Length: 337
Ligand SMILES: Nc1ncnc2c1ncn2[C@@H]1O[C@H](COP(=O)(O)OP(=O)(O)OP(=O)(O)O)[C@@H](O)[C@H]1O
Ligand SMILES: [Mg+2]
Image 1 (spheres, rainbow, N blue to C red):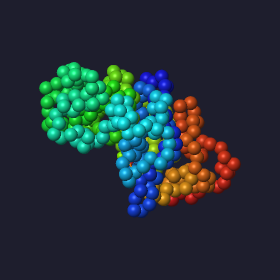
Image 2: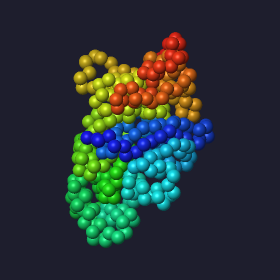
Image 3: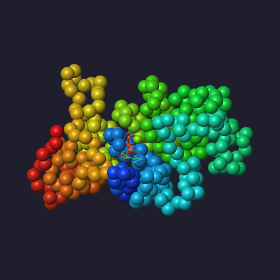
Image 4: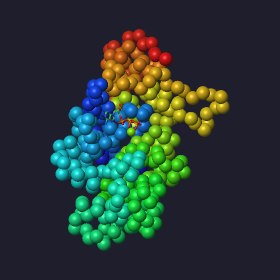
């Protein structure tokens, strides 16, 4: 699946949005690796910073947002040091991002073939229009769209086809990394499942690495090799998808997985409801940001932020339950209901 060669190292990445109510700490000192050839699923409650993180990896954060610190080391080079021209090249040739609604990324007055040819020729001017068209048709057929649809405009295609065109735009330039942000969410469940299957085939065939951001826990279980869990701008758990599902370590991950309906759920057994509300990221809780909602919170949790550390081979968790500290002996906190 993956030979554990790191494609991208994210180090100490922080992103803030400036709002009337103050600075929103949407991604706070996040560090993790993306391995070459893997599908990494990224989950977490709405507003926890998944899209911000995805866009930050491409340096696509727009004002009032700003990356306030960190390194983004891609194939050994820190793209935070790139100028805008180098970044444009990076965004086309190395990495590409697919959003929920491709209509916002596809030019409505440009046909699919024109989109693909332009993408090739901007980055590889030496390739002729005929050759570009040839490559584009082959790829689009590979992705299950008949090549006669190449002359369609985006609005003439179904949602699933538009997503495939977006995937094609990434693949045609041999991007190493595709970040899909809720890319399948607007599709019906059957098309969604089919596209998810295709993501796996695409990964195998093109050797591309994928970061898949989704609310759909079942999809992520099916699709991903590893799972990353975010809470309130922090990366709280990462690991092999089966291991995380089998034995979630972070109390937030435990709550998140227990709150998902499961076919095997015993009749009459109620789904877990996580106590409390997601925090306001203009004033995030001190220490571990999950502590006000955590059933296992200790006194230390409100005071000192734990690091995301590797507690078992390949399993990372950001929680005092798995780390020692002189202050850990303090009594347990009351949990808000
Ligand atoms: N343009 C913006 N201006 C101000 N705040 C923003 C902006 N975009 C995002 N935020 C804030 O940053 C935080 C993270 O938002 P983000 O969209 O990254 O979350 P998300 O995990 O992708 O949520 P969802 O699952 O709903 O897509 C939220 O508190 C959000 O309100
Ligand atoms: Mg989002």
